Image (cartoon, rainbow, N blue to C red; front, side, top):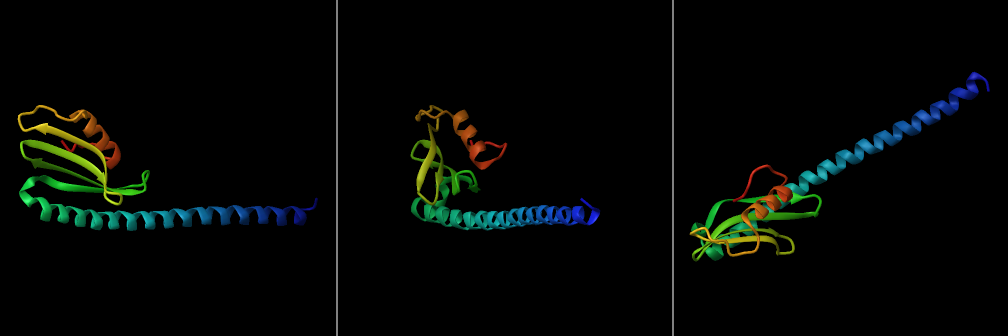
Length: 137
């Protein structure tokens, strides 16, 4: 094969590789943009859920600030909150789009645990779902 016969297929291969890389970079940009939109929508939707909870249960029921995160693996928005109910301190993580509770923790104010979920197990699940190193409890 002469040099001209070699150069044309080589250029075609280079163009195909470049197009593939360009498409991959574009899909990463689109994915990042979509993720930013989903996270922003989650924060807005989470705030609405929390505001509804405050109207229903009064603001002084809640301990600390609510937490929201878009969980990419579950493809949903999660809401976490600590609150007081009667003589109990509760914490929950729920999917705000299905209104499904993922995990709950309950203890008497004196410290006796009521639910089968331990504080350590709850915090471990919170760190995993919210991709953080801090605990909710």
